[in-house]
Amino acid sequence: MLERNKIAEQERTVLVGVVQKDQTDQQVTEYLEELAFLAETAGAVTVKRFTQKLAHPDSKTFVGKGKLEEIKDYITGRDINLVIFDDELTGSQIINIEKALGVKTIDRSDLILDIFARRAKTAQAKTQVELAQYQYLLPRLKGMWKHLERQGGGIGTRGPGETEIETDRRIVKDKINLLRRRLAEIDKQSFTQRKERGEFMRVALVGYTNVGKSTIMNLLSKSDVFAENKLFATLDTTTRKVVFDTTPFLLSDTVGFIRKLPHHLVESFKSTLDEVREADILLHVVDLSHPQYEDQFAVVNKTLQELKVTEKPMITIFNKLDQYEKNTFDEWLEPEVKNHLLEELRERWENDTLGNCVFISALEKRNLEGLRATILGRVKQLYRERYPYKTEFYYDPADYEADGGAGD
Image (cartoon, rainbow, N blue to C red; front, side, top):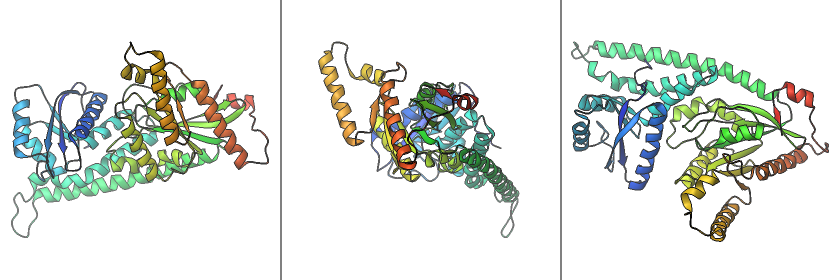
């Protein structure tokens, strides 16, 4: 059932976005840029993008009849086998669009779920993704079965379509309940593991997807966490013990956030996000080189507000400084002018973050010592506040090596 929308490698796709009354053309263009990156991550090739201004999406086909005909005219005769809408579609809208266009149609949520399904490696991640898939499917069953309703039935009778949909709905609900129970058991195990970490301070990397969290994790912990220039390279939370200047703490890498992240996915991954809730310090990583890095910064902060963790100590790490300089400064620019502009940028964000920010390039390993010093200062401060009876926190090297950590 869940294989229906799995994206095959190198599928050729067109993207569709709607400029609604509370959006601008530029915003929708940015959303489609991100959608294209998502499609690429899933293995598809984007060949064309369509947009339409609508006060409200069409209830039957999301876009207007004329725009649907324009899309149909374009894909006819071309090797295009997938259409991706940037907003959530209902089951009936998917059926109507596929009937009109003659090609498979999915929405942004379905695309993200497909990527998560590909990336899931552990039992917890696989269960979380499967639960989100079934939760996504359940309200769409009726629309997807609409073409079978009332077949062979008159007034007061039910056709085979309705009987079939009720059967499917019951199967899906039973599966959701089973997955929730299974996930609850996994959550108990994860909770026990977190409790067993003792009194170590916990530091969690958070941020938009593909901003370099896993790369920073590897540099700080000297571990080998999977890092790739694609969206959602990391799904499972990875935790390592780290020691700076004889001061130990636990460092965790978490799943990246994104605009329009499906609600069911957030709900299913709430156990993974518990790592964020239970952290003592958050490291908010920002891709400074991204054209919309300020929007991404705001999206992450909004998500953190929803998780009710904004009161925690936070250090904002502006990563990819090297790429930012390449994108922003011309080669002929005087070094003094360049340094002055960079200093203005730092001053601006130091004011906005109350001095809790660091600018680095993880790729070029620039200012890593400054980052380590900033993290160490906050960790030591929290240790002193929480355990005032202890003068220093030292670690047992033998115990540390056995635990699989990597010192500094």
